[in-house]
Image 1: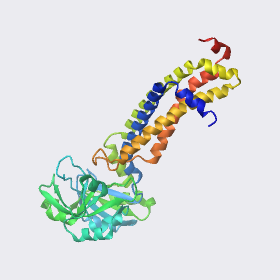
Image 2: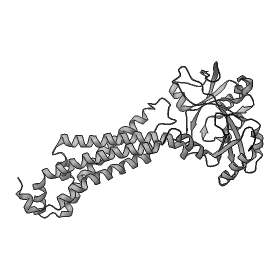
Image 3: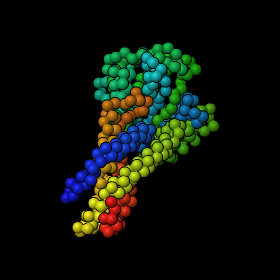
Image 4: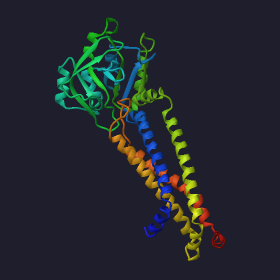
Length: 380
C-alpha cells in the first residue's frame, strides 16, 4: 500500500493505546467466536436434518411409548421407503456427570436410515453378531478413551442394574456437524432385559420417504392411520422435530444475538472514542497534509483505513484464538453434540469487525475531512 507507512506511523504513535484497542477487538471477536460455536451446536442438527426423514412419536409425549406393531403398518404405507425404531436408554458411565445419548436400535434397519454415520463393514458385522455389542460415536470414544474391544459398563437409571457392552465399532459422521456423541446397542437385548410392562414397545420411529416433497402427506397419513387408537402418533419432519427439541432450551439464537449486539455496541463506543482522540491529537498534522495539497477525500480515507486496520488485526487475532481453542477439544465434555467454529462464522465475524471499524471511524474521519487548514493551524 502506497501510504501504508504513514498509516502505521500514526497507529504506533501511542503503542499502549493501540494495544488496548486491538485487544478490545480481539476479546470481542473471541467472544463472538464462542457464541457462534454454541449457536452452531444447537442449530447445526436442524440445518443438516434429513429432508426425506420423518420422526414419529407418541402424541402425548416422547417419553410415552409406541407399539412395535406400528412398524409393519407404516412400512406398507404409500410413499414410505424404510422404517426404523429406537429407545432412549439414559444410563450413566462411571459418574452421573458423564452424560451422552444411548439408544437401543433396530439393527437390520438402522444403517439404511442413517447413511451419514460411517464405520467399517467388519465393525458393523461384529456388532450384528454380538448380542452385547455396542457402537460409539468418535467424540464419545475420544472423551472416555475407549477403543474397540473394550468392555463398557453402563449403569441404568430408569432401568436398574449395570449393563455391560462390548465396544465393537466407532462411527464417524460424514459431515462436520454430524452428531458423534451417540452410543448404540441392540434393541433385542433391550427387549429381553426390560420388565414385562415395557416389552413390545418402542420409543420412537424414524421413517424415510421416497420423495421429500411427499413428507407432509406421509406424515398426515401416519397420524390419520393411528388416530383414535390407544397410542396416537405425532409425526414431524426431522428438521421440525430437531427445531422443536432446540426450543425446549429457550430461544438460544435470540440470546446469542442479544449478547453479540451488546458486545459490538460497546466495542463501537470504545473504538470510536479512541479514533476521535487520535484525530484530535493530530489536528495540526492533518492540516499540514491539506496545506501541501492532499485532498479532503485523502484525509477521510486515511483516518478510515487506520480504524479498519485496527479492526482487522484485532478481529483476526480474536477469531484465530477462538478457532485454536475449539481445535484443542470440547471443554463442555460432550454436553454439546459437536464443538467447532465454522468458516462461515469466521467470515461473518470479520465482516462485523469491519463494520464496527467503519462505524467507529466515520465520524472522526468526516471531522478530519471538514477541518479548515487556517483554523487547525491556529491550535497549539
